[in-house]
Length: 215
Image 1 (spheres, rainbow, N blue to C red):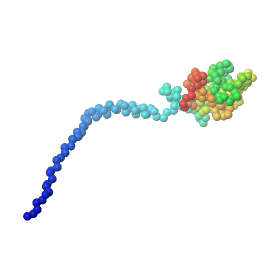
Image 2: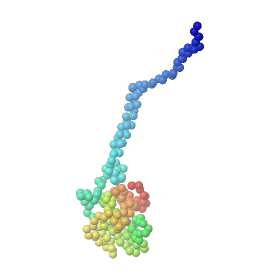
Image 3: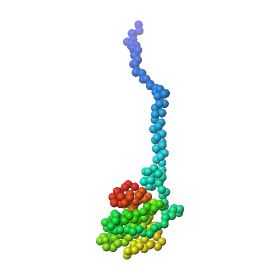
Image 4: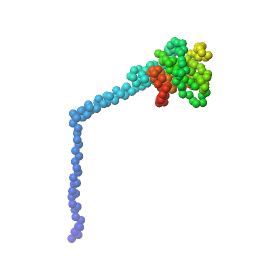
C-alpha cells in the first residue's frame, strides 16, 4: 500500500483588480483652437526678434525716436569733409560753465555756452577759456570736437585781447597730453556714445548737472 501524500494542491491565485486608466483625447477642433490662439503671440515674438536685429544705434537720441541715426564718421572716411569754419564767436568769462578737472590741475577751464554750435557734419564748435587759480591770466581757444572719432581741432587762440588763427590746424586725439580738458568736456556733456547730443540745450543742461551715464 503506497503511502498517502501529504501535499495538497495550492489554491488557485485570485487576480488583483487593477484600476483602469482612461486616456483623454483632446478633440481635434479644440487642439486647432489652441494653436490658433497662440499664433498671434508667436508672430509678435518673431517680429520683435527681427526688429531687435543689429542696428547702428551710435546716436541713442535718433535711435529712440525711431529714425535712422546719422552715419558714423571716422578719420579714414575720405568722403567726409568738414564744413567751412566761421570766425571765432564772442565770449564772456562770466558766462563760463566750469569743466570738471582733477584737483591737481593748476589751470581752470570753462566753456561759454553761448558759443556752442552743432554743425551738419557732426562737429561741435565752442570757445573754451583757461585761467590760473587766481583768475589773473586768461587764454581762450576756439575749438571743434568730433565725438565719432574722439578728436579735437583748435582753430584759433585768444591772446592779449585778440584772436590769432592757428595755421593748418589738424585733428588730434583726446588722449593727447594737451587735450585732457577736451576729453573732460566731451564726457561732461558734449558727446554721448560717440555722437553729439541732440541739441545745444541738452549739452548745456548736462554740463551744468552732469550725470554719469553707463555707455
